[in-house]
Length: 211
Image (cartoon, rainbow, N blue to C red; front, side, top):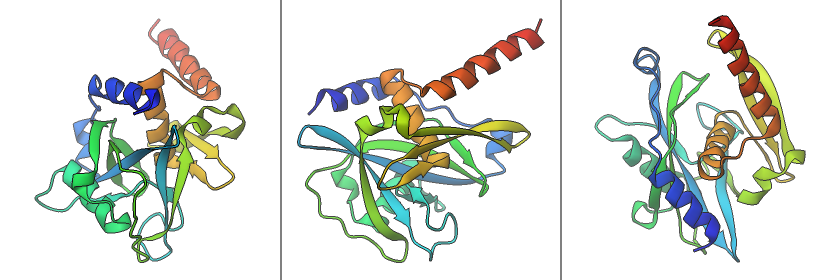
């Protein structure tokens, strides 16, 4: 196991993903995703999917495998079931190493993200009704400032930072990019500089408002 995977595992072991505030959470549909990590030739990759045009929500977008939680199942069971249904990775082959903060999305869902290590090489069985293709991206690529862009967008009464990571293979953005940013900040203390500036400005404005 690489130093990267050991670092991520240790960091997430000490981190408890924060749920949304109860009043907001209760108005949203519960869903869950898995952020699959794997090691190949000494490098760590994240596994993303390109959603097909046949799905109900988020057509043609880059995402982690996941979906709506069914009655009677936990969020973790949902993430593992959806991963198996979408790309054929069996739950017993996933080493869950942590959970990140819940993320609200404009489709009126709340996502519970789990992080897990999956085997490599792996044989994937892609469900064409849900997934057009699978896209592996190197974890180290997300540290490159040249691929990062930040946009402030009105959402739920405030300007919300929307992250974009523009790789040659695909652009990771929206809720999926927020999950990646949280993973990087939790495991490495890393925040893209434009985002760090926004957070620092918000902190100063909040302090000034309190007098």
